[in-house]
Length: 221
Ligand code: AMP
Image 1 (cartoon, rainbow, N blue to C red):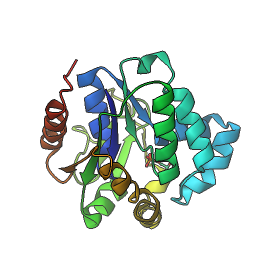
Image 2: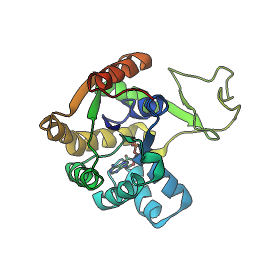
Image 3: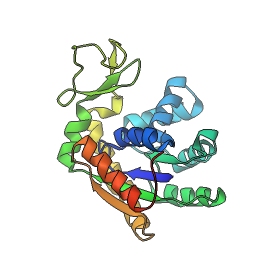
Image 4: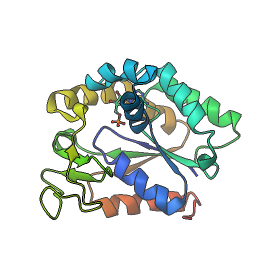
């Protein structure tokens, strides 16, 4: 299965792509996570990307296209992948078409998670995660059961993404509207675009995505 989850920051792409990874046995690829790993490791890509990410802007197409080109050739992608955060511009979508063509694989679907902008700001600006295992939490929607202790691993240190600050969230939404939303008609014209209600409960969103995939004849693992 080759799937793209598309939607503004905070739409739930990360959450849903992780659920689908387990259910369909394919690799989940988040370009945001890949870039954050480069920043953490202090690589040349990380050094170049950090200030751009902190400002809520998009890192250059060249870097992202190269990164994805290498990533989808790895063995864990043999059964397919779910892209979360890529493509984010029309040139990235065009480059992806070329890469998939070279590997003789077909994109099954592009699923857009639609969420109102006011809700996105609230969702993003309250989120944080366990520094040890990455389990996600939210000031309003999901606190650890024991305050200050991660439900999943017992860790006691939590982190917030520097670009989840309210000021930066607006820049990220602007980048989405100006540079990423134009991808929607690109895929719509190819008959690949499906839209689901990203404001529904998490389970309901997952069920909607699975219904789209079932309709396309894609079976769970
Ligand atoms: P995300 O975790 O998907 O919200 O991505 C965090 C940040 O990484 C974005 O705000 C961008 O600065 C950068 N980024 C991630 N994916 C891409 C991409 N496909 N193209 C350009 N920049 C990206």
